[in-house]
Image (cartoon, rainbow, N blue to C red; front, side, top):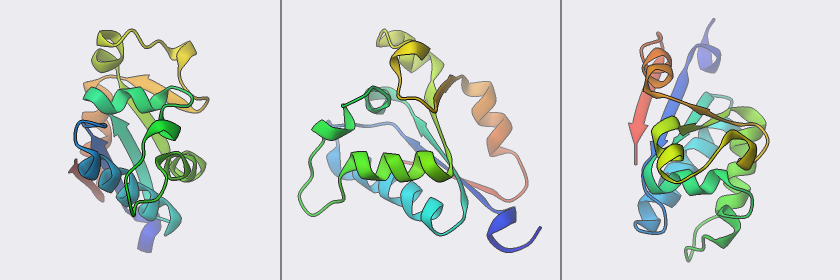
Length: 124
């Protein structure tokens, strides 16, 4: 493979409304990677796990930023979105609760994805 086909970006977002600019930036970077054809995996950990639930991204508003729900839709269309297992458990989030297409997986899966050739991981 060559070009964007051999590259993959893992973006871990650990914050939500508690750090809105960091949160928005992580989603924006993941969405732009997906839109440009780079393989992307968005990991929602900590407070960001709430955005895996229907409607939660709609409630997030940050001036001069793209709507989080639109970014999430774009990422889901072209990449993967994963909620950390422990983060979901701590918040009472189950697989049946999340937006269709979002999975719940643990740290072992993140590590497996992160160590693949051509992968760059970013944390927000």
